[in-house]
Image (cartoon, rainbow, N blue to C red):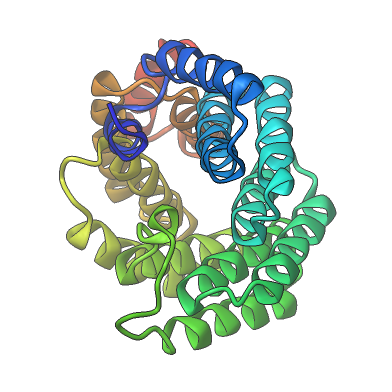
Amino acid sequence: MSIEDYWRRDDQHGGEALRPAVIGQLRYVMGVIRDAVDPNYRRSLHGIAAELARLAGWTYFDARQYSAAQGYFTESLRFAREIDDRTFIANVLACLSLQATYQDKPQDAITLARAAQDNARSAGGTPRLLAMLSVREAFGHASAHDREAAHRAITEAHRHFGCIADGDGDPAWVRYFDHTKLTVDTGIVLGRLNEAGAAEPLIAEGLKAEPMANLRGRAFHTFWLARTQLQRREVELACATAGEALALTAAIESPRVVAHLHEFCRLLRPYRSSASAAELSDRITGMAE
């Protein structure tokens, strides 16, 4: 199975079931590296190992096992630095930035995103890559409740995205960042800033265009749509939307998504007098966090 296939399956169902195979392949490649002599072959192997280590780190991140994720992301950085692949270094730093956002370390998230941008620019990173990295910085600013900086980073992301052209030579691992993803992520940043009126239509638009097969992404984005609807006090609609996200979790393995649903349950506490809110809360509470 190719690494792209692993990522596709991760998008569809989460990475829990994939992790043993990914780690097994990583260990195999590391063994081959030790015996490889040809420099071009070694460079290729380091690139493969860097991507496998990043994928292993991502599966642990999605499982909310942040220490294990950090270890594999660090390993991925080591392999990428061995071959001075600065665009891939930027990619791994972007993963670490997102993890820092989830760990409520917004300043670390911002610093890591900016370091990623520096690496990408020094290597002639493509507009698509720079747009993705600007969004990761925006997540950090939104988590820090810095409205002005978050909007500035989002504006920069859209500026970079507008410069995308055929023949840019995007790395395969950043091609997922299309207009739909930019739209959804913009909505999430605005939702984190409590700008629900602007966030809700963007997330809804992105969900309409998102591939139906990407179950984890759809569950994650459906949660964010429900969260913005609740911010607007559309309680019945928000509960119905969150119920859709809850239904999707039956087909995926993503503790990160489950944790978001428990977060939604906590946000519902002021509305427990609503029958739909009480019923949904009971369903979510029955899930293991």
